[in-house]
Amino acid sequence: MIRIISGIYKGRRLKLVPSTSVRPMQDKVKGALFSILGDRLRGAVCLDGFSGTGSIGLEALSRGAAKCVFVDEYQPSVKVIRQNVAKCGAEETSVVLHREFNRAVIDLAKQGVRFDVIFLDPPYRLLEERNPLRVIRKRGLLKPEGLIVLRHFFKIKPRLGDFKLERRVTLGDDVLALFSPLPPETAADDAAAAKSGASPSTPKPRLPGAARSPKMGS
Image (spheres, rainbow, N blue to C red):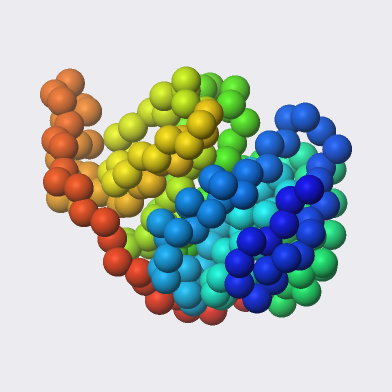
């Protein structure tokens, strides 16, 4: 059983996806994550990528996010996400996309959608084979003061360089990696360094502040 642990939907029980490949975040990890995020969710526009059951995006909405886009390409997950959105009565603040993640990012960018907080929980194999952070950076999907939360298995090392790693929290087998945008001048320097074969610069860590978000049509 999974549930919403705080906020306006607190205690709502959510449906599970009948597949071992979908790994809902445990309450302990979820609680730690949202404790870190704190008030930055209020009024935020969020993206729940590789959403599975949709529990993370719904938790964000429960805690004050203004809007959440849920993306998953697995049809049983999409069905469950829609059911869980309905269970919470969150239809007005939710957009559910049945789409491959990179294609969804490209389409959202074309619509001019930008996010305050992006949650990523990709399958282990996909994270090893591809870099979802890169397409987000290339398409400019994260706002300048935005934050990406990447959940991954502790033995997997995500590729770095597209965003600034602000914090890494290990909870059992799970790692929560928090990323913010690189400063514009650093990003330009790193691009030039990559072309010349030099090592990219390492920016001084700085946790970004909360950002207000415009309304986004569904």
